[in-house]
Length: 334
Image 1 (cartoon, rainbow, N blue to C red):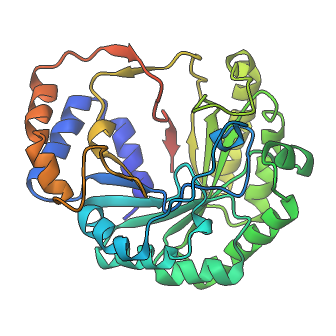
Image 2 (cartoon, helix red, strand yellow; image 1 turned 90 degrees about the vertical axis):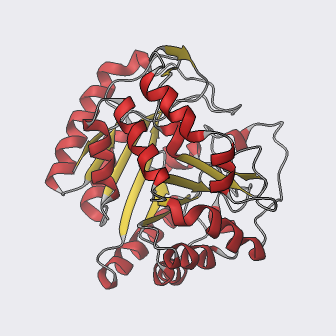
C-alpha cells in the first residue's frame, strides 16, 4: 500500500462529510480506518528547542509499554490500522521491544509501519533489525542542514551521527528497496535560511519523502519565536526551489506552502476526529477506554460512534472554531 497516495486522495476529496461517511462504512464493515500513533515510551534523549521536552519545568516520565501489553495493543488497534507510526511526541529508540511491536503489526497485516526518530541511537545493525521485523519507513527529524544550526536546534545532537545514520539507511535500502527514508524538517524564523541546503541531502542520500512544516506552539518550549508569517516571502522562495529538487530526484514532498496564522482554527467537521488514534503507556485511543474491561471496538460502539458520524454527515453545520491543535495542511506531490 502506498500511504502517500492515500494522503493525496484525502487532499483531493474536499468534502469532509463524504470522508467521514466513508469512515463510518469502514467501521461498520470492520475494515481498516485508523491512523495509529504509538509512543512506547514517554521520554527523549534530546531537548530540541521547539519541543516540550525543552521546557525547564518538564518532569521526566519513565513510563513505558510493558512487553506483555503489546498483544493487548495489537489486538485492539492494529487490526483496524491503515498506518502505525512508532514515535509521536517521544523518542521510540529508547524502547527495547520495537521489533516485537513491528512484528505484531505485520502479523495483523498493517499496511504501513513507520518509525519517527532523532536517529542518535541507531546504527546499521539496529536499522536492519527493524526492517527485518517489518518496518516500512524510517522518519528522521532534523531541524537544520549545517552543523551549527542543526546542533543548536537539537541540543544533544551531533551532525556527524546524522550523516552516519543516513548513510546506514541508504545501505539498508540497497538490500530492501521498498524500505523508505523520510526527512521531517520543522521551519522557524532562525532555521529558514538553512532549509535552502536541504537539496544537498536529496542529492547525497536515498531520501524518498520530504516533509516541511512551519513551527507551531505545542506545549511549552525553550524556543519562543512563533511568528513565521513575517517570513512568508522568503519561505515561498525557498520552497519553490525545494519542490524543483524533489521533482528532480523523484522525492515525494509534503509541504505546507502558506504559513498559517498564529491563531489556529479547525472545522467542526474533521475526518481526523475518527481516524487519528494515539496510544501510549497511559493512553489507549481515548482517555475513557480501559483495555482491561473491553475491546476498543466495543468501546466505540457503546460510546455511539456511528450515531455521531450520522449526525456529523447529515445534520452538523461545518464552522470554524479556535483550536489549540491543528493537523498539517500539506500539499502532497508524488
